[in-house]
Amino acid sequence: MKIISNDQDNVTLLTELFVEICEFMKVFEPAFRQYLIGERRQRPFCRLDISEIMTILIAFQMIGGQNFKQFYKDVILQFHRKEFPELVSYQRFIEVAPTAVPVSAIFLKFRIGMIEKTGLYVVDSAPLCVCENIRIPRHKVFKEFAQRGKTSVGWFYGFKLHLVINHLGELMAVHITAGNIDDRKPVSKMVRELKGKLLGDKGYIKKQLVKELFEHGLEFITTMKKNMKQKVSVFNRILLRKRVIIETVNDLLKNYFQAEHSRHRSAAGFMNNILSALIAYTFYPTKPEMRGLAMQHAIITT
Image 1 (spheres, rainbow, N blue to C red):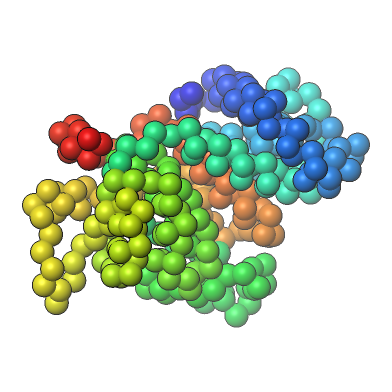
Image 2: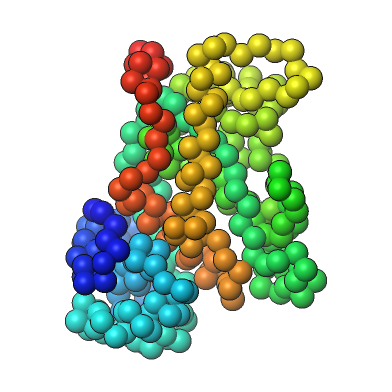
């Protein structure tokens, strides 16, 4: 599936996306039934199927718009009633959208599980600000969840999005934590099924973590601090220069898609937004990748 920017071709995008989700639901819906009691109870009050709800949420990230409210009212309600004959009002859609959170999470995990394990991976984290620093004392939506954190560019208030990608720019693992959590804490859990080489920046330096990953078949290579005497091989230095592709992935998620904004009014809305952005990225046709790695890739996988 390719992302279509022309409005007249949105029908094609919506159809292909809906088919993908429906095929997934056919296989996994029986396992959902015991967990989606709340969603089942709401069904008589909402004519939209959960596959349609997910399609609309993900399509917003692909097609784009000023915000989801504008997208739903000006695009979906005006031009796509034929594709969604049982459409409800925007307010009603917002009320039932939280039912898509657990299904979207499993759909994302399913999409990630289909990606090839290439043997060369990059790990990094990106801040997800929920409000400007000046508004922290007045912020209430995520008062019990968000925390202050610090990056190389300064302080922020919100969450951290931890990503592991392969050298083709495809998602291999995703983890969301509060903004004050150490970047190194979720790494072991995220890469426990991976083998080969893992690249990270100097923020991930920790001997115990390197040793733990090595015992599981993963060589963790990080950039060195100026006062460190440990030497990095020429081959590994070349790889470390190419780890910057994960910065491009973070930029796509925040600017091309809308993984980060300060308009959230509920935790469920935040989760739907970030999950739909990550799912939309898995469909993105031109992901950044490390070029000129045919020989390195052959060495790693042998």
